[in-house]
Image (cartoon, rainbow, N blue to C red; front, side, top):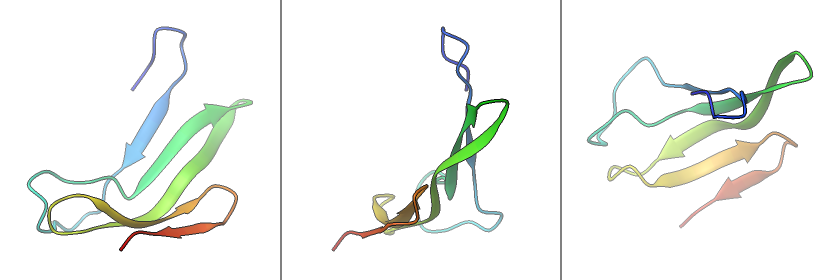
Length: 65
């Protein structure tokens, strides 16, 4: 996705499906200083599509529920 200011964000999706009605991203990256920087990775989702856990770019883990 490219924002009006030219900032680009990419979403990586898992290759195998899941129970969510639409594929949910497994990683979110953003362009930074000529490369890609990970904002969130190792994302898992509950069956309704809500994020269950993710790892932030700084390595900290966030779990819900």
